[in-house]
Length: 231
Ligand SMILES: Nc1ccn([C@@H]2O[C@H](COP(=O)(O)OP(=O)(O)OP(=O)(O)O)[C@@H](O)[C@H]2O)c(=O)n1
Ligand SMILES: C[C@](O)(CO)[C@H](O)COP(=O)(O)O
Image (cartoon, rainbow, N blue to C red; front, side):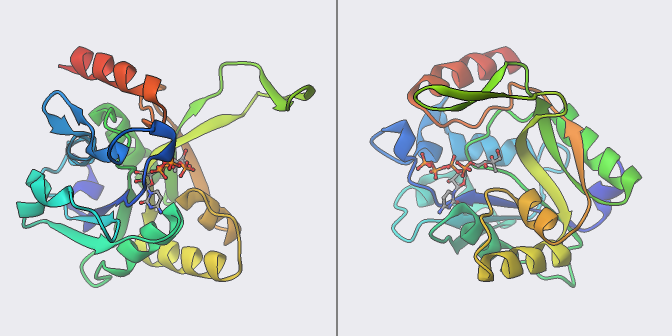
């Protein structure tokens, strides 16, 4: 384990979404895979290196499912009320963290259960070496087009990445950047975009392309297959 594993680390899990694109009978983070909710898989994934890692989980106001998960009884888990957008939920969770106890924070989507420990370790190690925050990301492998319904142009894909999670940042700069960016109406879809908006450096750390965000119905079978493979 490296310095981060002891250096007052915590994790935030935004889990207040409704999963509209999944078109399921419940929010996708509560769909079951191999006997556990996707949220519980994602929480366990971000805790692979530190099983008692403090977690703050942002939940929807009317969430009736969380209480039935093992996380509800976990003394190192704090549920908070999420917000209208993912960024609002993340900010609410960050505001629940005590900066006198936590220096760095991992933000990991509740819908990414396939995070592997090797990727998590690489993110921690490379950010520690670089002395700045960073994100797991996977290089784009397909030719990328912009347009619809006809192609307008092909997007140059060299140095183009899919942003993944976890995203790792110092707590106070991230909380401030997110608060300022949102208050000034910036479009923030991940923590890195808030830090970029604030002019802070963000490291790209290559991660596995199977660290998928479960979003659409076809992602479920793929996630089940990958979980089976992970054993
Ligand atoms: N107001 C919101 C919206 C999203 N999320 C969380 O952010 C993560 C990634 O967002 P996304 O995949 O877009 O989830 P949903 O918003 O639920 O999906 P959809 O856009 O299909 O409704 C998910 O874990 C989701 O629960 C959140 O905490 N608060
Ligand atoms: C944070 C994220 O997972 C990075 O790819 C992604 O932006 C979250 O999904 P959303 O649909 O943008 O909320």
